[in-house]
Amino acid sequence: MALRMWASSTANALKISTASRSNIGSAFSLSRSFSSVLDGLKYASSHEWVKHEGSVATIGITDHAQDHLGEVVFVELPEPGTSVTQGKGFGAVESVKATSDINSPISGEVVEVNSKLTETPGQINTSPYEDGWMIKVKPNNPSELESLMGAKEYTKFCEEEDASH
Image (cartoon, rainbow, N blue to C red; front, top):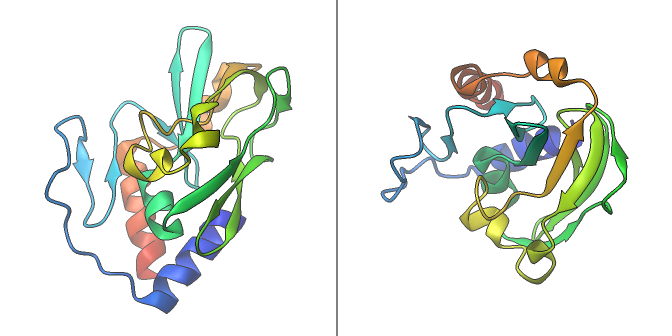
């Protein structure tokens, strides 16, 4: 929630350009004017994504979120074994603009942390859906995924959110 509110107000205050990116890969099924949304992922209204594969779910922040944050310079992530709760903070992202909380889109136990982000936090900017993933979680209740948005719904949500600011 804090990330969404900050990102929206910052984008509005800075009048961030909505110029198209020219090199968005074909893996992106839906392209917005300044960020991309991957098909096959689930999205939280606080701008985190989750990819559920087998018994593990990978979590990160969306391209939309990283775009509004600007250059990421530091990431605070939990230790493996930590419990996360849907809608509650599990870490923070610090950019050149501000520090924002990261909320978990699902509940569960952290089984892996992307330790590469300690050395190269900018991977969140350059590859938010691949190299910039943050944590992997063993979900407590996989049905929580049903409360999250798909790619089309998230794209519409972002467009409406941006239009209201």
